[in-house]
Every structure is written in C-alpha cells, then in structure tokens.
Amino acid sequence: MEKENGGMISPKLIGTLEGIFRNNAGLAKMLVGYIGKFYEKLRLEYGSFKIMDFCGTHEWTITHYGLRSLMPNGLELVAGPGCPVCVTPSYYIENALKLGFEGVVIYTYGDVFRLPSLRSVNGASSLAEAKALGADIRIVTGIADAIADAKAHGKKSIFLGIGFETVASGYAQTLISGLLPDNLKLMSLVKLTPPAMLKTVEMLAKEESAVKGIIAPGHVSTIIGAKAWKAVAEKLRIPVVVTGFEPIDVLIAIAEALKNLFKGEANVSIEYTRAVTWDGDLKAQEMIGKAFRVVEDIWMGIGLLSDSGLRISERYSFYDAFREYDIPEIAPENCQDDLPKGCKCAEIVIGKDKPTNCPLFMKKCKPSSPVGPCMVSLEGTCAIWARFGADGLADRIAEELDLR
Ligand code: SF4
Picture 1 (cartoon, protein in one colour):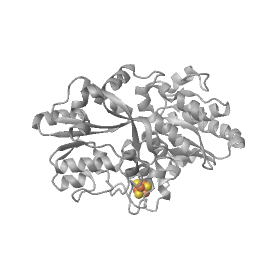
Picture 2 (cartoon, rainbow, N blue to C red):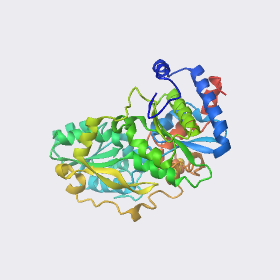
Picture 3 (tube, rainbow, N blue to C red):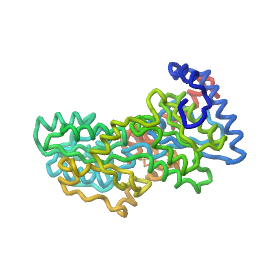
C-alpha cells in the first residue's frame, strides 16, 4: 500500500489482492474483523462517528453490496457531495432551457437531461420537458459526440460540461487542440473536489457524530493525484484513503482509515495503486491549468466555495458559452433555496441526513419521477438508495455471504 508513512497491509499482500477483489468472502470477513477491532478501541475516545465517502460510485458500491450492514454499531458510512449533477445549482439548467427555447442546440449527458429545474422556463422544468416542447436538446455520451454532430449541422450549439476533475482533462484537450467547431461553445460547470470535501467535513464537525475518516474518490485522484488530499487530511486532522470501487477496496479503505485514526495519523494513503499515484496525471493537470481558470463556485447544499470551479481561460474564451451568450454568474443569495419544497438534498449531499428520512423518498420522488437532484443521476445518493438500499437487499446479501 503506497502512502506517506507506514501501512497496515504489505505491498506483497496488496499485489496478491489485485486479482481477488471479487467474490472473496474470506478476505471480506478478515477486513470486517479488523474494522470491528479498530472501532472497538476508537469508540472509547470518539463514541459514534462517521466515515465519509466522496464519490457517487463508492456510495454505489457501499449500498449495492450492503457494506453498511457489516459495520459495527456506532460506525456510520455516509455519502458526501460526490455527484456533480446533484451539486449543480438549478440556475444553470434554467439558463440552458432559456437558450434551448431561443434555438440554440443543447448537448447534455443523459442524467442532466432529466435534472429538474426549480423554476420552469416556457413551461419546461427540465431539458427533457424542453425537448418535448420543441427545443433542440440532444443527449450525448461526451463532448466528442457533440463536436461531430455540431460540425455536421453548423447551428449555434452549447455543450453542458458538468463534472469533476475527471472530465476536465478531456474538455481541456479539445480546447487546446482546437477541436471545437466555431458554432459549438462549452459551458464549463466543472467543479474541483478538495475544497468541497474540506468544507463538508467542517460543516459536520459540530454534529453529535462527526466525520473521522474519508474515502477519497478514485477516478478524480487518477487526475489530481493523492497529493491533492494532503492539505485536507492535515487541516481536518483525520485520515484520507484513496481507494478503488470493488467492495474489498472499500473495506480495505475503511480498515486503513480506522487504523490510521487509532495511530493518530492524519495522512493520505493510496489503496488504489492500480490506478492512482501520489502526483496523479501531470500532463492532464498541465492541460487543465492552461485551458481553464480556477474560480469560486457554488455547490448546491454547501454554498460558495473559493477555488472550487473551472471556467474557460481567457486564451480559449472564444469557446466560452458564458461569454458568447452573456450568461451572468449566479449570485450566491439566489441559490439558497435552490431545491423543491420538502426535498432534503441539501442535507443529503453533505452526509447530514439519509434519503430514507426525506418524506418524499419513494413516494412522490422516485428514479422514474425525480423531484430533487439526488434522485436523478446514478451517482445521486437518493437514486442509489432507491435502487439498492431501501428494501433490505443489503441485509439479504450479507446473510447469503455468511458475513453477519
Ligand atoms: S428523495 Fe427526492 S426529494 Fe427527497 S431528498 Fe432525495 S431527491 Fe430530494
């Protein structure tokens, strides 16, 4: 295990683990044993506490494989703001709706297509509704599809660039390489994750059960490197573990975080050595630095965070949808109530509450008819819980694997 100092599991054992991340009840049991032992010691000092995962895919693994059911009482696994669609203020979708009705072709990912806007525009409260009402909204799998399509028709177009650092390098490359046709502009709504992780944990510091360890996102860390979490770990004085997406990866990360907490080490460990290095992808970082400027940005549920967003740099501003269509940046006071009535997404994206405590969960709000943003994307906590966590599936899997 690569890390700043020391390690619970030897590199040799980690090498062996590479091929056995799946269907390994024996290893899972061993890790659950470690977790129980470390928590037993830590409970005396901290009482109940939380380990936070940041990435929606980690939340998927935890919920889908029933890992919560394996945790000792008092150790809670909570999801943080790791779903870019969930934390994008409605304001930007409303601007895309407006431009769509003015005849601009809007390219979007499939989940953003269904994201509800708080205020309707011309009778549409999502890009899906705008399409039904005649706006030219097109779902694509990435910016390359949008480039090919926009070149073919030549009409004024916008690609909605929602995501974290993982997608930023791809956008940067298209800008730097001059791949965008003149008629296609990029609305960069890319968010940078470390400031949000720091703020989220700080927001929960006064809760009865605080966050004492972080499972850092694996995909994002391939780009920014584990080094990006060093300041977070040091400032919060809690361990951070970068990990992969198999259930065994996540169990190792929890055990490692507890062990480091027990040893009083506020450090960063890399469990996901098959994809992540300390420095990350330096070439991608360089391209991102060239194509974008870092700005303060608004995260739904968290608020205004400095150095937490990317907008297109001056050098490539010809392709900037904000500039082309004169879209003003959102005023922080305009997104305080940026959620439908009754929706608890603001508490859910910071791990303060659970989807099952929302009165709308699986009643008015379902994956097929989402009310709030956390029910839209496959990375949204409510959508994940709705599909895998709300009907006792987790307990049944644990029983089947003889892990209870
Ligand atoms: S269940 Fe729906 S309404 Fe409730 S918090 Fe989740 S997304 Fe919002």
